[in-house]
Image 1 (tube, rainbow, N blue to C red):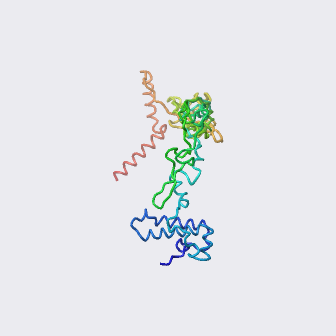
Image 2: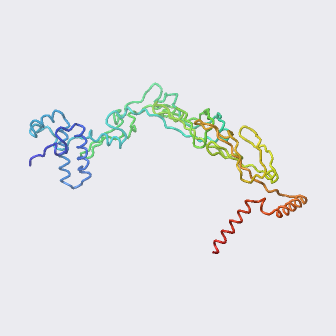
Length: 373
């Protein structure tokens, strides 16, 4: 049976580039590989045919002879569908097994892992900024072996299994692929005489004290990055980073909402009715707050600039003071008499002095009448 044209087998034009031929071959070979098509003779034949076509067209000299003389120009120069095509799939299986073709051992130096530390702060410290010291458990490069993991005077040797490449080739049917070396875990090195201090790890555990400068205006969820303060690198690689995550503790007086602060201030009935002047707390100290006469409970008073200056810039927010009219308790006999007298006078004046009460009861009446209609 005559052979099909190699360009037709791969589905490419005669002027296709090497990259296009490689891409087309990968598609055909993956689709028709025997492992994916067990007991499928047609797929197996197509697979072998694609191997043979790629073997010729990916080689510039063979391709030139094929273009000039056809199949007769490359007769006896192909492996009849049994080519080693690990190169064509190296990029795929390298990703799966942890590295591409060649030089796996060159990547044995790796950066250390990043660390995370949760820092609880008082609201005052978060708003105004502070400097705190923290103790962080971490790993640092072993000073005895300078991070190599080998005993001083010795050095890591090339892995005897992968010869320092960090990968080994596995043959499975037509496939010849590379995967991470099981002995050295892809480092390409093995330590025959480990360091007595780190036992071959190249790093040791310790707890270090760090000084963290907290900028003014931070809030829960913000992170401060300390470069190089994470885990030690592998085999002398650079250290990772430490991320300090801010968590602001609840405050007994203030609640924060972005750049604004909120607080509740209890006031007496007489201050609410007659007005007065109160001292209220801020994060900067006490300030005077004037309460006008006839103030209702829940009213908000704004103290401008007494909030938070955002960490990313901008004007300071405000302190919002919500007054809560407090009902007196533990009344004396005389206080009860005065309040009863006031209640009588108030009743005689009608609803003029309680507009919200009057409008509320009017609304209730309309609602109930609507239900009955």
